[in-house]
Image (tube, rainbow, N blue to C red):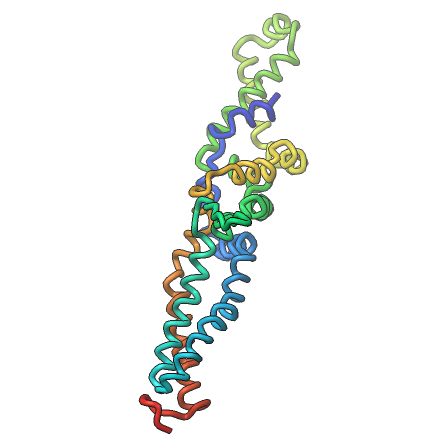
Length: 276
């Protein structure tokens, strides 16, 4: 049937990459929404890590300040703390890529990037979001009808319309040809094809639910993503972080300096060498 043939030859009539690029360009916020949904736990970890790492580094700073109470230490150490906090947090999200089993004698600990540890859950979240916003039936049909492979789609449609016409004529074909003539019969088939093309959009309106169920893209994407090697899966989210990774680290460092200056001049009220 038409849908079965369409699914079997989907790559020939539908350019997935072109559609995704068009959607992302037309709606730039969409990429951010996908990123926030898939990487929600990682974003929370970055936020919370500031407290935990800041506390640990702060204890080191406290010990250093006790023995060397110089005002210069506060902003300098603030820079180091702010820089290392975000740097370590980002590394912990994506490193190590492949799991490392650490034998501690009484137990074995699995070391792997936090995002990679939850590959299955992140795959489900990504599939749900991308299918709900981009790869749903309405977008797919629209792109098949108007995208770069629309002619291939229409050729497939024409083939099935012709087959249906021949099937309906069936054994009466000799009589029909005798009555209409070969040329008129071919013209009739062309008219039927053109009529089918003109009405296909209206027919598709009633096929969206069936198309989504038949393609089952959400399950297909989630399953294939969950089965990806760790190094390939890591590239799903990490490139988004990489674009602003340095900015995140520098922002942490600058905030650390500002906190250090606040401690120096407001809390402890000391100059660069520690004199009040």
